[in-house]
Length: 317
Image (tube, rainbow, N blue to C red):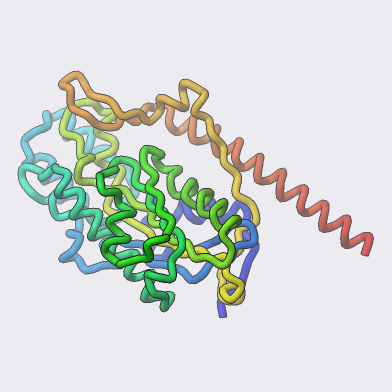
């Protein structure tokens, strides 16, 4: 039986590390007295068949960039430097369409990639937890750069023939925070919908997001992202409490969009040649550090208040 733990700050750090380093398992959690069911697989080339997601070692990535013949020498040199410092292993994967020369880039390819990533993670989640699709009450999918019609959540409902009264949500444009924002949304929904199951699927689709140009701030995204996806199961059902691995006590959100430096640090725009992509500014590390500092301060205050309250109750009773 999995133990139930009270997770405050550490759940944030664990989720961040798992997504950055693409570990094969994602620890699951719930919100405010809502229990988490079992761990789900994180899709990567380590967890699935290489025939589905081709392996992309550094040498192959740079070779494809060179053979694509759409970048100048400075752009290639910049990508070599960033890739070598990225920390990615030689086992990370990419979608099939990005192994084409020239690189295939279309909404159709993006849908194929979405189906492969999302369907495999959700299917694996169902199997590992021995649940059926019709038992799911809430479905949330987040993907920053791809938001097609029909939506990604509608695609999952159609594939797994889910109930007609399921609540579905599709979050886009929220960057690296989208996974935690999805958890926050699920927390609020489970608070008002007792005895429910919720699934969150977090991914980023690469196909339509490959940048072929000369702007270094936009070339960064080619080097810092690989195919990945995670599906997690949250429950507010009493019968799931004993097998829950974690119970999330606090979830703190810090929104710094009012600050111009924060607002502009990751920005979708066109370059001088009118090529659309996302620019990552040199201020991003500072902005992220400031946001994390504020966020950790907020959650630590909650933890201190809780500790003091427990100490007071213990002294009195």
